[in-house]
Image (cartoon, rainbow, N blue to C red):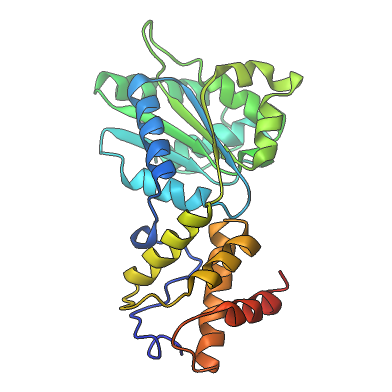
Length: 270
């Protein structure tokens, strides 16, 4: 309802991830370069941690979109398996190497299939990337199984690259005594930080421009308050900015000020 009022083509602050609206800050560009380096150098294990709402899933979608056809990828977004065989079956299912999961196949058989697949990809000059999202939710034995998968290697290099992504608890997990062997193998560890105030302003303006805004719809004082209340978390920035646009429309305000932000914050109980 506010799109016409503000001359926008679409909702600039929708929560669903969209590559068109992905904001490439300087820190995100550096993170992309670091992961690309890890892939090129076959470091084996990489890890990204960050608070809820910091944009990890959006980043992963963008990162995957930048990979070329020489990188085969498996994306696990729910690692809460009850048996190691379920993890191995998922890997093979995602790559369409088996038609369906079965309780009859042994762990040894599943591992053999994975190993032969990895060798074939290596011979063809391809890389295999296994991404485990929400990895903090994985039971310890699943994380240990993932570590064991990294043992697949030639005399020169790893056959699989593994990227663990999760909330800050993941860092605590891999640094625990129980998983110290896993923690020692992670060559690249990065924490995704919330946006600072300047990045928050650039983020809001970028999304507005993408949506067709012809003018700066948010006053600087409004942006400052958004940053303070959102703590720089993109998900909260989107929620507050969206509600503020609605408030501005209802109040016939052509530019969003602190009053509209305060209304949004109250509506959201932040």
